[in-house]
Image (tube, rainbow, N blue to C red; front, side, top):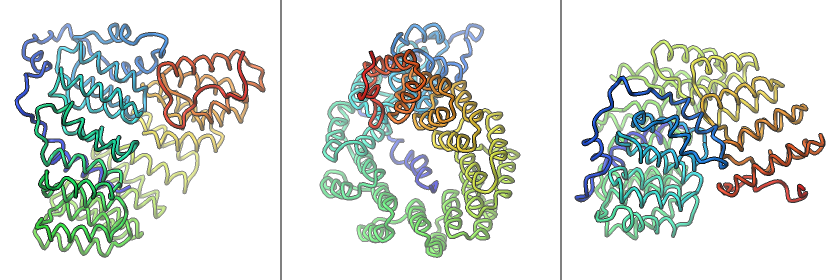
Length: 523
């Protein structure tokens, strides 16, 4: 997927959505008060806590058999808690789809015991984890509690996270009700303006719900006077819906309303044309953009390189890449990823690997997207040995792949009868403090059971459940069938009991197992 939406959300959205964190006069935030009043801990007494180690300890903690709080007290004394530590641990929880209740307990523990102020980033990651698991009641409770005790942790980003997830998983009316509750229960005493309205529109637009976004815009435009950011959010929504005609129609509507296009507007339109394979039109917009004295950004160049790749114009992609320093821009990970994607698409894997080496030499971060793209290219054009070699390099660099890459690698290893590599990746993730996703367990259990390694499949399933994560029904039925064939009722009962214990605390997400198959009762 093109990087424009990520860059817009991460960079421009930070400017016009997340930057507005000031409120009407509020009491001094308690975390700020603690920071001002507490004495700094002498350096000789401060214990350095390793993020990976702490994440692994929390993920490995038996859930729900034992409370997490005593473990945190033992391994994370109050004077060792820092803002960056909490952010990094929660970030790992989010990336690895860890148990959401553990993440919530860790955040609450840190908030209560930290001698340093926590950041809005930590709070927002916790909201992300809860709402992604659809624990909306817990998210609303947390929002109200933090609004009362630590209001400076709540930003427009917090509001955006919750409303976007409600728009994704619940109804149009629920999203509007969420906006009302934000105004009445969370941002108490704050008069909502265009910035808050933009967050509501963005919630619908990011979910490609443009009919709903238009309805809200028409309904509330008299209360909230739209600005350029409002129009760009709507334009982005039409772009994400994949309809270039709608993008252009709304663009002209923007102009009729008196809005002047900016660099963000052009980037969105260029991306829309690139995604539809209309690369010539995208280049025309680049010329128009420069004619109007808007300097192309690194996001513009990244989008155009992707567009050149979609029409398999490798020469133009290289030309755009080489123009970057001439335009006084600095190539970043996103640009390299764009060109690597082009090369992989045209099966020039050798050049893609050379670009990876160049990134290492220039100390440019090898992102998870970088690895995923090159792994995909190696799987298509080389073989298991080359994939294994890159996999070993990735682990030697302590890089942890994202969920989609983990799933892709485990599937590939199993298909190529390299269960040793699949199990090695599973073990590597656990050692780094990650809890692999249920899709990875599905593939691993299937591969192991089909080759008679039922004990290994049982252990992996047990590790997932011990970390407070549900197995999928597919993996559960597969393991159940092979344990029955082996006559190993003790292991079957153990798995069944673990699932029941987990259900009493952690309701399964949609599509996850609800317990041992009801077709046969375990006695």
